[in-house]
Length: 297
Image 1 (spheres, rainbow, N blue to C red):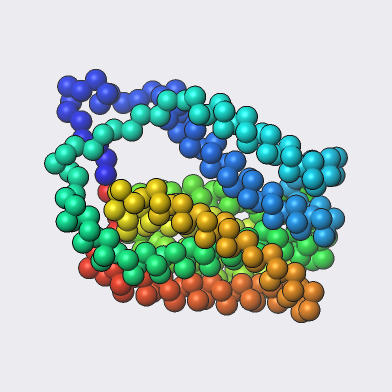
Image 2 (cartoon, rainbow, N blue to C red):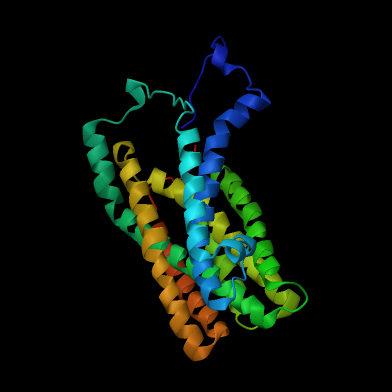
């Protein structure tokens, strides 16, 4: 919830651009390194098999995939050391606004089923996204000739940046469950189109899938925050990222098996099935939490 400040409070003044950058900078950097590191893992796996046709092509090509992991790890260590020294002040919660232990317990019990459903949807979303990250460069290598397939994969990921920004705006302005459902429903036809298209239409459909797949992440994070008591929120986020990035990474094996036996189009048909199941579970989540408002404000 936004912190209420009186007009006389000096901190109530509109922050300057530098203040805004100082507040947002660490979060943006951490988010970028998190997404970049995760994509590098999947991209390096696909690159090892399919000619390093990814955004990291220059680095992998120059250093090899082992050295690329080492270099990326070094950058993350340095970034962690730098940002660990940045002071981040969070406003304290007033005693009057904190829920009682009884309320917290009741919220936890009421949200348990919804939280379990949300964990499964997060896992399926991570599975689909990681599978696409692994398969996309190789599919472009076979079906795109008007531009380099590494450049095409990079273009699709860049479109996803805009999707994630839009998803953040939607999460702050709209009802979270409906927004979560919309982004996933919008991604489903893109997967089916990717399984059948080539050349520019393929790159367009793939870029739009990444747009919606990344755009739903701020919404999903907001739902996790809303459905968990504050004292368990960090644990809930830890579970989310273990499931999304850890368990979701088993999609690499699915991609290898399906592509090897049925081709790249079949991979995306399978992913469409995964997203269809995900959408059904979101419907169950909406029904389970129908009496609970889910907003960011």
